[in-house]
Image 1 (spheres, rainbow, N blue to C red):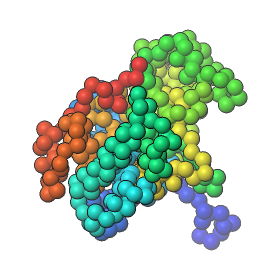
Image 2: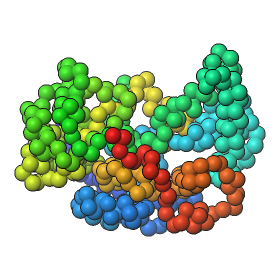
Image 3: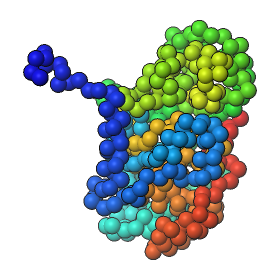
Image 4: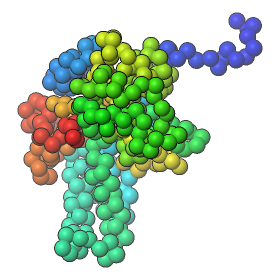
Amino acid sequence: DGDGDGDGDDYIDADKLVDWREFRMNLARTVTSSGKNNWSSQKKKSISKENEVLLRIQSESLAEECMAGVWAHEVSHPEVGGLVIRMPLEVEVYRSKKIPSAGEELRNFIKKGEKVELWYRKAHTLCEKEIQKITAYAENGQIDASKISEVSNEFLQMYLDNQETWQEVCLVVDRNNSGGTASALVLNRPMAYKLTENLGLLILEGVLNDEKSPRSCVSVDMLMEAFGEECAVYVGGPDAQGESATLLHGFKDLPGAVEIAPGCNIFIGGIDHAIKGVKDGKYKPLDFRFFIGKHEFKNRQLDKQCILGKYQPIACSRPVVLKQCISLPTPLYYEVMELCGGELERISLLEQKKRNEDVYVEFAVDEDIDELYDELGGQSIFDDDDEDDLIL
């Protein structure tokens, strides 16, 4: 109205940001940056009916949110409250062309606008050739890095890193643009489903018991009373594993909880009141997720790794982040990629097909997505050592 002091123009209603995310999601569903349709015109209620049934058992409210329309789509850069997912080695090589010899060969053989199935197969062939070159130097199961070329050494490091972070789905919980730092929690590395006293102590106080691990007002006995028989604990990443656990949930009214980004309705913290709420019957134990450790990025590493094709930034609806990832019939990794549609959906199907057959097959170039689904029996097929199964 012109009577303000000028600060009014800078005010942003956090609640409106939810609408902004929905608006951007609808825009992304309609048109990609290339002008081509990327998603179907309708929201997907789920990718896996089996996952949907499991979610309804664990959380009726989250299941209802999913039924209203769960979504995910690619974004250009990592954002707090969004995901970054680890891309397959073939995709990393294709996108970054980081390896001089393989990258040059890939550029020579891949034509502009080539179908995913074709460049994926070519990228795999190049990876396989490089692995064969490296293993040829192995003696007694060991590889002397000094004997292989600089190109092969670089590829070996890329391969090993890919194995260590295989199919990670990470929630970005902090990002400082000016400082170039970020942190993220790996959502799909379950560690335990029940508590022990030692695990409870780790959750509350960490291993180091130093200034970085804030002391809780509750005891291990109180934690065990609330979560002893049912508690979802995850390995959040390789860094800060000696600190107290991060509590993730979706309860705005929980005292001590902090929203990780305005309007996302995803919260961390408030463990004291979470314990009290579970004991009083207000919450269920599986309404909460505990994460030991996290990924910490410095010097804009996360942004660089996204540019190089290691990670793909994704925006998604709240239930994708908050639901449990314990023995999911369809792993979260595939679910997120298939929700995104387009190229990521096709990559997901190819990865499942490769894993299903345990070998790289000659993918038919003209194979469409419906035929790929048919080959998978209409759903994803996974073995007993899936990443969403318990570690302990």
